[in-house]
Length: 418
Image (cartoon, rainbow, N blue to C red; front, side, top):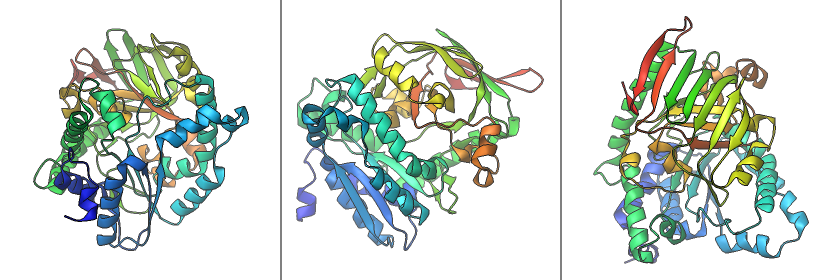
């Protein structure tokens, strides 16, 4: 047994972890020969980082550059740093990352930190630090939101995260259960994950083709606590599964993914909506969200838990109270059927239809690669320092597509595609 193999916890299947790494490179990124890769991950995810580097170089990567984060280092700031620290961020780092993206470096992020890591810290400091980082990150975010390069997000089952999802289990059992849930959702528990993803992408492409053919001007959501009309941006385009970035590389930005999504019109959202699952945001669980929109803007917002954090999130900037994404996910999705709350948007958003506050994606416009930011804004696209998804779908939600003449077409009934 090699040193590399020994570093993988006994509760994680090394063969499936290897397949996850291969899927990240071949399906998630579709990394090109000679292309550099910038990678971020928790230090606890080092076994997956090593496997990804191995598969990246086998695929012909030019240079793999990882940056690792550590939960204790993060907490040290909140425990010991002066107050001035929480209005600062490493702008120089994000500027360098943006420069790397401009040079066609691919981006991969591994998530897995304890989702409630900052739950015991001062919410005001958490909010200030998050806002400072969002502002500093903007040059790099613009490259991601504009889909300039191929990028991917996937997950690793860290012990701290596993024990949030399975609090009644011993650590090794919790890690094993979370690992298997990640492997199943990521389609690497199958013999040929690359082929499985090809089949899944074809299914999602069929949904987007139908929606793009209908050219709805709005979607209407109705159900318990929800009567919401989401106007769709002028010239919007539905996306789902594999998409082609501006650099010409077709990739799957999220592993897993069950959604098809597009850009709402930032000034044409009206009504009220209630969340159907909790939102884990910056170490706080925000639950029981209820908001009301007028002319695209949230004018009332409350939550049964984490309301103060929600309020600070909505005050991030002018675009934080408007929508940047609307996504459709059937209630019967594999992640929904698992019955698990992952406390992580990458997974939880794929259990239910959802909306996102903040920044829109330029790729969700016809000819989006050639539109200027001013044209995107004129067509209804939103701009913000944030992009935060939260779930509004369930087995009780109906969705109609609204045509230009006001007629309606059933899209979802009781949480399922019609």
